[in-house]
Length: 173
Image (cartoon, helix red, strand yellow):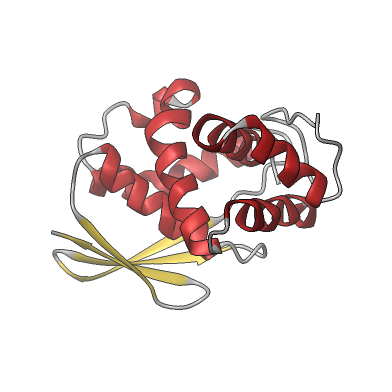
């Protein structure tokens, strides 16, 4: 996994809950409290998952709650600063969500050793999208949180429901 996920998570925890909570999370995950992550750094998937679990413990929240907070922070605050180009030309949540697989495909071509999740889409009707998640990491909750974050970014009311370990339903209200 690329370090951008851990870097964003650290920024979120420090900014919203305090540096002490982030340092305690790192220590609980078996890392030095002064650990920093670089966006392009390759990280062991399990090490990042341990950090996420430690954050949940330190903040007394569930994984879905952490994923929702991460998704909103990543989409609304973190990503616009470093991935502004991916937002350009996207006028609403539907357009950005439908571009996610293309964005991840481009990432695999331009970022060495990138293995982001991939997505396929299935429209049930003109307002209901089934988004399929393809990744060995099993982080579907983060996809759901990121989708909710896209809705908040565009100030749209999306109804997002996890349908299993590999798909979610998005209703564009």
